[in-house]
Amino acid sequence: MPQYLYLHGFASSPKSAKAQAMQARFSTLGLDLIIPDLNQNDFAHLTLSRQIQQISALILAQSEPTVLIGSSLGGLTAAWVAQQAAITDRIEKLVLLAPAFDFLAQWLPRLGLDQLEAWRTEGTFPIYHYTEQRTLPLHYDFIADAHGYSDDGLKAQIPTLILHGTNDETISIEASRAYAAPRPWVRLVELFSDHALTDVEKDIWQHTHDFLDLGT
Image 1: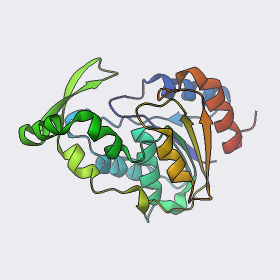
Image 2 (image 1 turned 90 degrees about the vertical axis):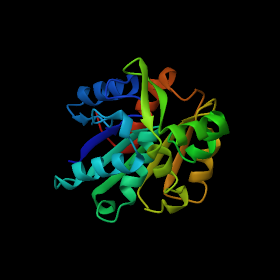
Image 3 (image 1 turned 180 degrees about the vertical axis):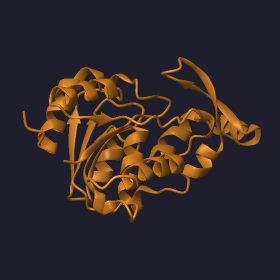
Image 4 (image 1 turned 120 degrees about the horizontal axis):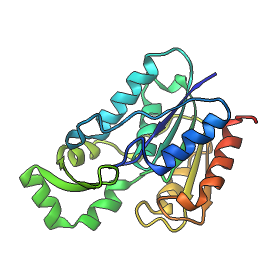
């Protein structure tokens, strides 16, 4: 039996509504869903690379195959973890919820050039952390590191299910459409929802349940 890992989104935590709902669903089937804290008690120094390293170490520490479920930036992280040469053969399937593909191209224009330059020169920028319910500083390394990753490099042919809301104003559905189109191992399911996907939890579970063949 594989281990199941859930990767929460940016400025979130294992306590997020989607994470807790998914964990409860797994529990009803007698299955453990592990939800590591990607903040690592140091949100200020969060980077995509750090998340990839953290999850890669968890996977390499055990011998069973892994199913990765990731939300938003956690979804992008899951895709990059699966791309690592030492990890690819250990991943059975990926389930990505509104994955943050092409996220710098979408996020940075909203931030604006002035704020981005202030972030770069001052070193940190205040980010609202949804679990902490307060703003926390995030180092510019988060941006600099993310520039080192291009979705074009994601080529591991692992069965992948993407669930994305058509009304997502944070990560456009177009990003998932563009990702899925040239990758026949990826199935995209479009849901009438926004980035949070909280109003389609039952649909998310049904699609996830069927894709992972979790039984009853």
